[in-house]
Image (cartoon, rainbow, N blue to C red):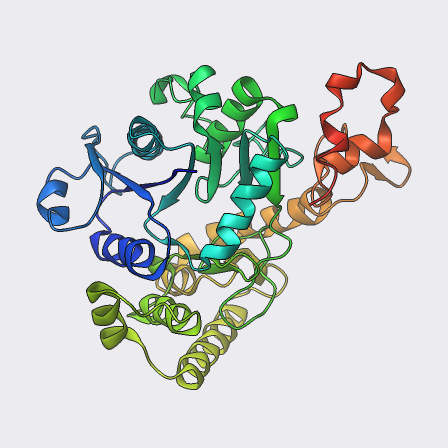
Length: 388
């Protein structure tokens, strides 16, 4: 079975070097590696990497200084373009199954990855992903929330369905995030009967082993699927070099040490675990204490564990802090009432239709509430997908 790894990025070339080393020098099997970047000088930066195909992405302009609407649309389209083209590159080289990654999404356990691919193949699933799932609806993900990293698909099936034949600008990028576009494509082109949600963000950990919550700053500053070895570290959420220190910690912990780029990375960023954890623990306590003094008593969770978001808030002018505090309090209240809800009723009154069922898996929800004999046998996708 030929397996492809599709990698998309803009300019995180150091992370790309490490990721390629993980696959080429620490995994036993040979994999097709396809890379897409829309950085104008990407070819120069990756010319010495051991990859099979590179595709230049569209040069869609982006700057953090752009007006909100243009900034949001351009970033969403840029990410969608690189995802699509990195996957198409792997498809073109004869891969039977492909996993998509961003450069900060590192799969650290080859055997667990192959076990997941074999499970998908054995059970005839055509597309598998993780995320809060198709049972979690938000304005930016109205058909459900799926991660745009670590998703796996059957190449022949997605080609038959023209899955990657879409115009990013025509996927409602004003409203939908990349996660919302991905779930829309899965529902419309893959179908629930061919889809498998292998993890729903209830079993992920932070660097210190604490259980991660996806309700605030999902994916930041880091999340780790301990069972499968799927690591995501958003280095921009850590101050200084701490994000890279966390990445190095996980590489060493999983004995991922081969390859010139990994060796150099570990040399630069690996520090003793005790020191790393103590530094981050002390910094977090210090920031939380300051935030409480600025009025964050009930809605401190709004920051998640994103260090740099906390630091940025503390540096805001007073009037911006007041506005941010007010919005955060409203969002925390909304989350308490709706995002964490188990029922749509309050004081016996139905406030809204029950459309979000997370953290229950959607297949399990269907199986519990529907009678299989009501439907043709070939429709009953939820019976094989009711639990992980």
